[in-house]
Length: 422
Image (tube, rainbow, N blue to C red; front, side):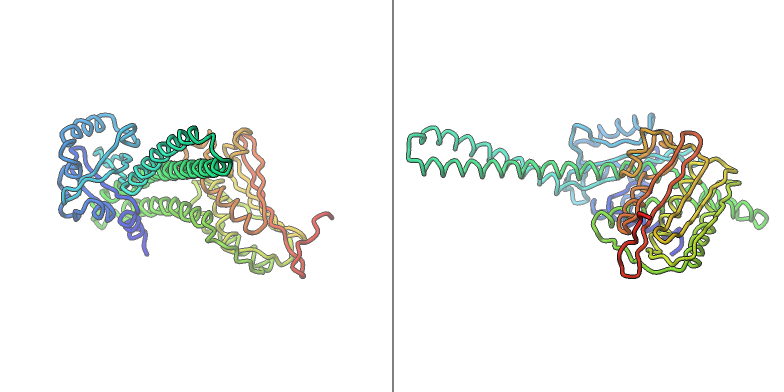
């Protein structure tokens, strides 16, 4: 599948609705999920004002909000403190969450709306609130009944106490369910915000290069065409990398990923690392060079796929956080007890206070917030290493560089981990 089809699949088969409008509020594109949620086909709503997707009662107000947004565009979630609704083709209304992002192509502003149908969640909230109200009502009634029955026999009193205890436990369970639902909603909102922010730059690159390619049809400008085709490829690769991070995280946290441990000769291991380095050269900044050294002759037991992903991620980070013409050092050492892999750069480094959070989900160091990334790469690496009983260390000095060290313990012929005390 080529990069263009991958991007088209990402847009059309996203699990949330995506609607793109121009500065007049006219719909210029929608994906399949948006068609499904609103009941329109793309052909029916392209060219229509976005207010066609809103309830009749709020359309005039929305035009004012929309015009204000275009005057001061910013990426943000909508509807804070109030409920939002969409209107289907058949006139039915349903609750939604909307997050907005924007991008500019050749001076023209476009707005992307990420729309989530939250009907199920709203219904669940109504149900939970009704249950809570009913529970509070029953609790009050039972407490009053308990007062009137205090003088009755002990077994009756004991029975009422047990009933109250069961009701309190039910109340706690409902509170836990509400808290879990809220946490899931926050995680989804964080994903939408992250995706809208990280996709903005490559989307702008793709669209601008696509428009420029239409102007370079003459045979005497092949270099310009190739330049913009390469920009599109790189932008789609960036989006694919972001999507791969989210998919990998989901599979890892659901326990769907298992280590496939294989025995590799030292030579095969070094070849594998060389292959990754050669693949990553195309993604490095101008003038950056990678130097690979290795020692050891023992066979190792390792997951080849994990090794490739770990090394690719570390090299990508080293390049991303280092200046042009900087050197990146990759060192591999195989001993009787360990497989040791080091990736060292001379980049921006990591502050001491950030190191303890470095392998958490979505974490970005303070000096890296303006550099593209999801904050998931090192978290995924740590998960891969857990599956291989490995570990990772980091040495870093701010503004001088960082070194990441991977340790994967090796087993002896009986299948037991080798003694590391020698």
